[in-house]
Amino acid sequence: MNLLTSLRKELLEQWRTSRLLIVVIVLVVFGLSSPLVAKYTPEMLRLIPGAEQFAGLVPKPTLLDAVNQYIKNVAQFGILLALLLSMGAMAVEKDKGTAALMLVKPLPRGSFLVAKFLALALSFLVAVALAGLAGYLYTLVLFGPLDGSAWLNLNAAMWLEMVVYVAITLLFSTLLRSQAAAAGLGLGAILVISLIEGIPGIGQAMPGRLVAWGAAPFMGAIVNPWPALVTCLAIILTCLLAAWLAFKNQEL
Image 1 (cartoon, rainbow, N blue to C red):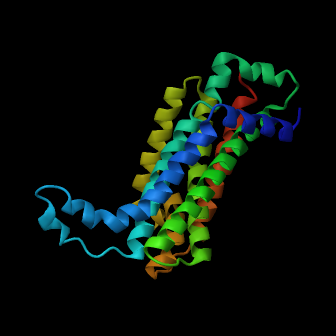
Image 2: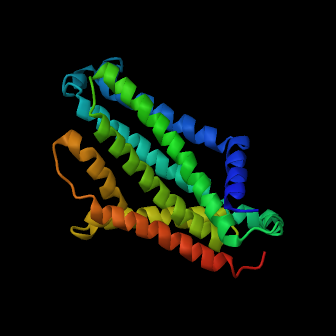
């Protein structure tokens, strides 16, 4: 069994277990709802008894509000889903003994690991693409046209950030046999990276800065994406290498 065969098996499993469908539904729902929330927040406030007076204080929604709402929802929930889907990718396979059965095929351990990573990355790529399409169409209807290339770059940046957390959590899932522990360490990594992003200078090279680059054209700002891009790729490659080094010496 080679890498492509293993990847097809992983993608089929993503579909059969409805994990791909769940990711797509969640992100598409937020892609659709984000411009709606931005557009109708003042109207919703007027429907709440006692909150009518605050509705007039809310500025008229703009296209930038829709973009910001989209980024906040899709990026945050995408990262959370990356943690939840990756936490058991290796830990469950080892705990149930299915990893040992697959490796008897024979399948190189590196191919087994990379296939899982690629399957997760492709699943999020499909979900982000569909969420981006949904968000674009609803924003077009409610606020007007968006810069298509800038919107594509924004969604690509958010996808890459999600893949970073897929790689991090997959590493913890490889090191441990408990998916709960892998999820806990993955959440800890999210918090640590979020804290580092707030440090001047160093924060410019963190994954979240790549999303800021994607959002910059809509805000009339200029952001250098290269430090964050290099960091994202370095984290992914380091996590995969560390996971492979740990996995190839593990007893299954």
